[in-house]
Image (tube, rainbow, N blue to C red; front, side):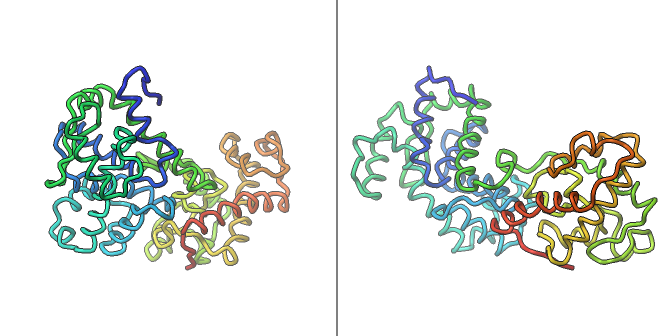
Length: 374
């Protein structure tokens, strides 16, 4: 979204998050934290509350999607420390995590965590205001610059907020309160775009960055479940991870029929059939968002996919379901993929599946996704 550049506040927002000055993500996440506090009606805001919001807002992109925030970025370090120590995982809700960070006696008593949070106090509140006082602070070292920005913010009516250094708080200027409340939807969209651009630079080969800033609202695997159950009825499938048939006699031991993303959903962020297959629920939970060991499972996966698509091409009246396979490339044309009655060449199909999977597998591995085998 675009800001209305006829407003002076919009001009200052752009200056505060100039791309050339966004070496790390903390300015954007500090601004998001302040914005959320303002929308909740607060004009006097603790440093610690904003830092806690910085952590909660960047938690999901880092823990679930393993996005790289850059070597110098400190948010990833504090988030991995919290997760490694307290094991909250990607499933924790933002509101719950925020409450824990602000009120949990265990976390408040964690000296390492509190020191990591306080490290943001020394930079974020001041650096966001730097554009308002650029000429007067030019060439100063950090501590002197912070002191001068604090002093100048007291008398400025233009700057975003005043800094109350002794109490570690900011006080939002009234006209900024009004501006943000009146334009919060546009400002949120503008901020999200700033983060997307930043993260795309840091993660150049990772797909679907715009959709990895927040948890998904919902997912639907009904089409894939129906597809694989139908195939399993006529040609019983062996689970490639356990070698056991996907039949009811094994459900009590290994869990019910379940759909697995061969390359984890948290990396590809889609539910296309060529990356899906059936397995047992307990096995799926064990694999979670890990990468399957290719040497052990890839060829069995390709063979299962090949047998399924050939059966469905012969039998289904709804050829549209097969259109997911068009995105894997290869020499099969649109017409041949959806045309009932024709067979897919196994060598071409297998190479197409491998060509689609291998590059994204390697990128996911480089991004930090762990390898798994049963």
